[in-house]
Image (cartoon, rainbow, N blue to C red; front, side, top):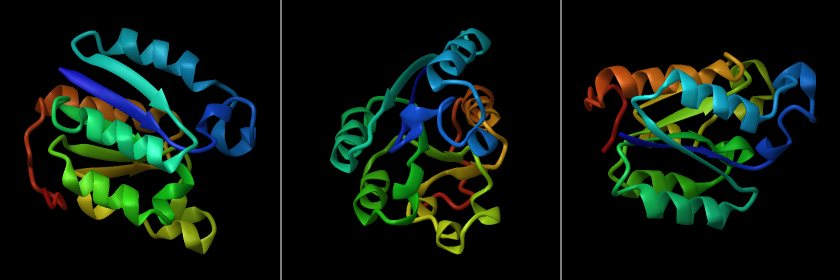
Length: 150
């Protein structure tokens, strides 16, 4: 089962930036751990700081992969274009955030992509990704319909 982990802006700085919020591990190191923990899943990883590149990646895999774990970073709160891209593809998308976006600045409380995602996982640090992958591994995936508009 092919699953893409897609990270948006500034997530290439994990392990370097704001360690109190995002921790001290790089995502590349954590990704190796995820691949070992989920041998039944064919995991791939892509990160971009550019909105259009993220949209292109969603279009590229959104009709052939079985799922996408997506941390859109700050674009979560601002991008109608990413929202439209998530809505347009067939693959179920699980939105993840390392920090609890609801415990941060008020502008971060609104997700533009959430209405078109199967679900959202926030605030569990890097483990948010593991929880999303467990969803795909256990449900393989079944469209259970909770909040999914696809």
